[in-house]
Length: 460
Image (cartoon, rainbow, N blue to C red):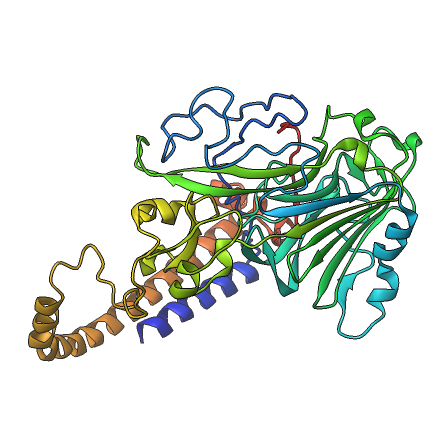
C-alpha cells in the first residue's frame, strides 16, 4: 500500500509539472575519482605532472612523495623488452604482409549476420574530444579483469575503466595512437564492429587538430576474446615524435589502475577517491610507422581462477597466487597475486589478504558461512528473533493500516499545495514564483547524453 501511494504521488507530480510547463532535469553525474596518481616511467625519461597534493598516505606507502616510484612488486617496463609480465609484445615494423593479414575490412564485417557495430556514429562524426560507450558481446579480459564494455574516444584510444569521468586519457586505456585527433574533415570517421569473437575499431582518415595539412591517419585496434590486443598502422604520415602534446597527450600502449577510497584524514567524514596506476606498457614511437603491427598477447594472471583450489594450486610464470577470503560486502572471495596489484586492491587490503598463507586449506563453505565482524553472537540473535517474531508480526499489521492512512493524507496535502502554488505562479508572472516558472520550462529540459566530452589538457 505504501509503495503504491508513493508511486501514485510521483506520477501525479510529474503529470502536473508537465501540464503546467515545469521541467524535470536529468543531468550526467561525474562519478570519477577525486585525484589520479601515476608512477614515474623512465621509458622516455620524462616527468609526469602531479595532479593533486596528497593529504594522507596510501595504504602501504608505495606512492608517497614527489615524483613517485613504482612499488617494489612491479618491474619498470622499458622499450625493447618483449615480456611485460601481463602481456608479451611482438612488433612487426614496415611489414606489408602482416598488415594485410591483420587489417580487417570493417565495412564488410558490418554487412555480416550477428555482427553489431556502427559505420557512422552520430557522436563521433564531426567530433573532437568526444567519447561513446559501447557494450561488448563477449567478455574481454584486460589485465585479468573481465570487461563487458569499452569507451571509444576520438583521440585514438579506448577507455576501459569501471567509472566514466573527464580524465579518460589519464590511465586505464588501450591506445594504438592517442593524440589530438578529430573527425571534422570530410571522409574522417571512426568505425567499430563486434562479431562475438573480436571487437574492431578503426580510426579512418582522422586528422590532427591544428595540423590538418600533415595528412590523414589510418589505424586499427582489435580486441580478441582471448584477451590479446592488436594495433595495425596503415598510414602514419608524420613521425610520432613530431606530434604536438600542447593540447592533448600522445601515448601508445596500454595502462591499468585501481581505485582506492581513503576513509581517513577527511575532515567532513567523506572518503577521498584516488586512482593509482599500477602498470603501463609504452610502445616506442619509432615502432608506429606505416605498415606496422604491434601484438600484445595476454599472459596468465591470478584473476582468471575462480575457485580456491585452482587458485592455490596455480603455477604461472610471473605471479604467486593465493585465495583472498573477502567478505560478501567486499565483493566476495577472489584469487589474487601476492602483491595485490589489481582493481580489487582495496578489498585485498581491507581483508588483510597479504598475510594469508598460500597453502590455506580450501573449504567451499568457508566463504558462504563466514560470520561478519559485527555478528558477535549468531546463536543469540536467532533465538531473540524467534522469541519476538509473533509480537512483531502483530504490531506490523496494526502499523500498516495507520501508515496507509497517513500516506494518503500526505498525498492529498502535497497535491493540493502543489496545484495551489503552480496556479499562483501561472497567473502572477511578475512574482518570484512566476519568474521561476518561466525560467524552467520544457524547452530547457535536457536528456542524459550517451557520450562524454573528455578533458585532455593535463599531461600524464
